[in-house]
Length: 192
Length: 309
Image (cartoon, rainbow over all chains, first blue to last red; front, side, top):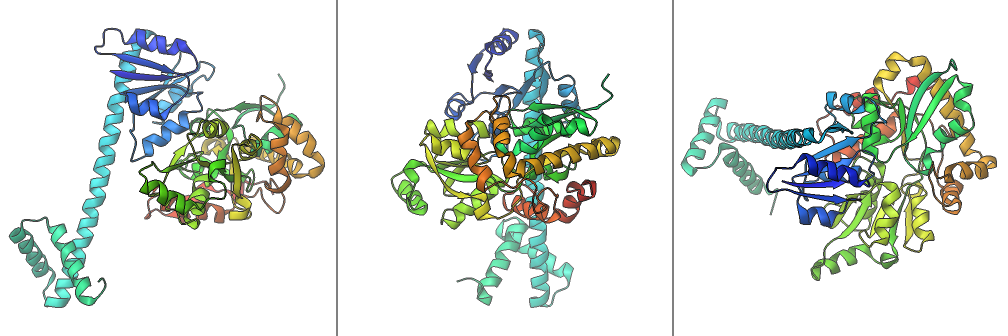
């Protein structure tokens, strides 16, 4: 497991390393400030950052970015912020963890953060697929409309024709529908 | 006991935190029966999370960030208009950016890197608009990264970024250090455009409406005070303090003289048209679904009805 700890205070990195003893292979690196080159070179499995670190915004933006490498992030909150970690976790805000935790809990916290991150990435992928499916349905509807108009078919007949084209050509019906619309556009002179 | 209602408010070290700092240091909160703890925070994400869960009762906030918070955060007032600027490193001063982009691509160098303060920020939208105007595609031709305001200057000094869009005083600080030159200010790109707001938890408006109104009255008074040229020297002194913005007075004065508007001409009002403009930018940047009901979103977040008459 590769862990990057970003914290001006060395004590936290030592605590994380102590808590992960026995995990093999293990590499815990400590950085005072976020450094992109270092993150890309190290490719940590999880980043632990002090909640009071200004670099949090940079890390958060990496989670949004399509390029670069999104990493699960665990935040340690100072004890001077009573209740923040609990409230934030309840609200689903982020993986906040109260400072002063026993080393014995480090492992499970990092594991939870990593699996939650994997789940979020999965959900994002599912959402993108659902959107693509919806888009494909819209394309099929438009292609059906075109066939109904041009070939005088009813809706059912138009769909059967599309399905036959898809089967004959061994392509998904959404692709066939998109091709049909594109060719219809060319024939009308929409594109050269 | 003091008998005062307690509130915790957060800010980021930037000149436009002035209405909050003035209200605190000049006793305007106390005049309204409030005991305010003003907390300097290190990142916008932490500000957002703390306000969203009620760990802060309000904060200096990027306007788009409140719109992106799923209704957990309301905007009952604006803190300022304009104030940010775009700075490029001295190596790029006077250069044609589109030509630089093409030359770097031809020679296999990596893209130019620009920094903004957060994905959901006016700075991001203004920088993208400005780059487009220079014939540079903000998505294809350059890399845009996020760096917190107080760290912009050191990252430019380290040669990691070629330009940035950030609030005052950090553009003037970069110029004073001879690292870069201001190319354009927000007031030139979008006169009177929105910038920071006071973001408050939706729960505060529900549960403590009187305290919220008292808080708004004090911050509005602070904004009016900060606008008055007669108070400028005092304002610079309180902003320069190490616990506040912690920057040189000479750098702070610049945006105050010509750029930032805190209160005059209705600047403190949370205007719906600001929210609608921002929502449109969020769609362009893929931060908001194009099918979202912008009107309902802006109505829920921008709350001129909470602004004290």
